[in-house]
Structure formats: structure tokens, C-alpha cells
Image (cartoon, helix red, strand yellow):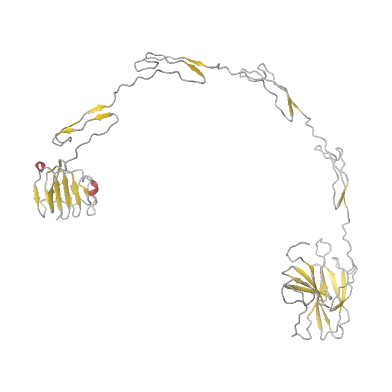
Length: 483
């Protein structure tokens, strides 16, 4: 069983005790007259009376000691008592009620545990408080300076450390001021006033006259555009709030009429010839509607220059005739036809079909598109008609090419030989056995030379067909668009 602790003086222990496991009174669970402890703490604190078996307990628990109090199993409660009166109290098994002080039980005290009664602890001797304003003596009396509930008196004295009378102030002085002359205050209490009605008198005068100083004579401002006269008035050129007027004159330094512009000049041009502008305003116009007239002529005729006569290209494989047309072998956008003859230079071992095409069909077309050469007609020239096309663009002379292409089988198709180059990467010129290429990309021929684009070095290389000699004819080794 738990312990019931009681700390009080025996002469005030007025409790009819009935100790045992059972209870001598019966209550109704959950009524507003019953208070069940649900947590440890002070009997008079409402925080120890939470919900009990799902029911919220009365808010009077802990404050109204006339109710029935149940110290629930597993809780530990203390109570100071100090003469308070309480109703029925029941202490459950495995719970504790500790009482420290005087208490009157008007009902029954049922204990299912152990009741322990102890006197209250004697308080320490009271100490003297410190104060900036008072001198306080140590409390004295029959209870060591304390009071008690039996009426024991404690006595101590209190005195002021300093007199409550105010100190006499020093004589009143005259304050300093940039604007006023102030005399020293004078009264029957050294220049001061008091609550008895004593008056203090002093004088105040201005150090300087309140009239504003006369302003300096106004000056004439500088201006790049105007000429001013000095202001004049009956106040030295100034105005005032009495309505005094100040007068000055303003004139333009120069005439507002704009200067006559210079005679207009004739602009230079690579394409036009201009005459000098003429008008009644020296060749200029005016906002009044004056007209300026000049002439413009082209320096050159709009007609395109006639190109040189077309020449027959050389070829290693073909005999090509000089192009013939009424435009010197050229075509025109009016449908002009240029005729070219083509024959082989050597007799073929078998029939050869030559594909004929235009590099820009928007400028010219060819007919026929193929030529066939045999052992019987290989040296007989065959005509190719090249017809100009009107592309509706005013783009002047445009260059295009006529391509001849034939697939010719090598007499020994399985044999591959090196024509030029060592096989090592580079851009070295020289004979066929020392020259180097990086990335040969495209190749064309004029019948005497091969022309190879070397992509990685941005070069155009020429290879002489007869000797294999390699030279660089264009490019600087670095990619750019410089001409």
C-alpha cells in the first residue's frame, strides 16, 4: 500500500480517522461533487484533475475543498493545509497524499495505504532587506521574528535614510542667447519661484534690430544671347512687399534672322553627273515654296559590255570546236543558240556515250543530252546546241559551263598506280615522287593539267599530266574568304 503523509501540529489534527482497505462512504462516479486525481501535483491545482474515464471533471476541483476528493491509484499528491477545511477524502491503493500544515477534515478520510503525519518545517530567521531609501531593523517576536496563525506578532522599525526636505537651489542665472540680452532673475527666493506664489522677474531685449538689412544693389546677369540694363527702382533696383516696381530692359545681342546658307555644292558620284542647283534663294529651297532645280545624268550607258568571243577549251580526250553564235559564241536571254562541235581525239576500243549537261539550267540548256562515238565516227564532230534561258533576273552576264562526261573502262581495270604524291600527309610541292597531299577532295582537268582541291590545307594544287610535277596555285593554308 502507498503512504499518506500528514505534516501538522497535533493539537489541530481534528480528523475522525477510519483506516482500512475499504471505503466508509459511497459516491457517484462522474458527478460534479467528485474530483479524481489524474496526475501528480498540488491538491489545490486544477492541472491534476484531467479527464477521468472519458469525462471532463468540474472546474471547481482544487478550489472548492468541500467536494469529495479521490487520490487515484498511481498518483502522488501534496497539500499544504494551513487551516483549510476539506470534505471527504479517499486515498486509493498505490497512491500518496502528503499534508504539510494544519488541516480540518469535516468528512471522512479513507486510506488504503499508510498515513504519515509530520510537523511543518521551522522557517529560517527572517533577514533585513536592503534599501537605498530606508533603514530597516531585524524583525523580532515570540516566533523568531515570524508571525503565526495563532496571532504571533513580528516587529521591525523603518526610518528614512535622508531628510524629506528639499535642498535649497542655487541662485537663478541668466541664460546665454545669440538673439536676446536676458537679465538675472530676481525674487525673494534667490530668483526662483515657489508654490507659495513667489514671483521671479527678469528682462529680455533683442541684441539686434529686427529690421532686415538693406540688400546690395542688384547686378546685371551675363548672357550669350541677351543684353540687360541695370534694374532701377526707389529701393536701389529692388522690389518690396509694398508694391515697389523694379525696371530693366532686355535686348537680343544678335538678329533672330538665320544667316544666309552657303551656295549648295555639287555632290560627287561614280555613277551620276549633277548640275549645280538653281533657285531664287541661291540654289536653296525655302518654306515659302521656293523651288531648287538640278539635273542628274548617268555617267555610263546602261547597256552591258559585249564579252570577248567564246574560245574552244583544250581537252585531253576531246576535240572541241569554237562555239558559234550571233553573240560571238555566247548565248543570250532572248533564246540565242550557240553551237559547239565535239569529237574524240583517239579511236575508242568500244562505243562511248558522252553525257552533255549545263552547270546552270536557269541560264542555258543543251541538246542533245548525249553523244555516242563508235570506231566508225569517233573523229567526226557532233554538234551540241546550247540555248540561252530568260530567267527574268536583271543580273548581267552570267558564267555557266558545258560539261562533257564519259565512263571509259581502263584497258587494265585491276591495275592501280600512283600518279603523284608520296602517301604521307602534307602540302609539299615538287616532283611526283616528293609531293604531298592532305585530303584531295575534288579533281578536274583542262587536258594538260589536273586541278586538285586539297581540303584540309584549303589549297588548289596543279598536277602536270605529262610530268606529274605538283605546284600550289591558290590558297594560304588557312581557311578564310580573303581574295
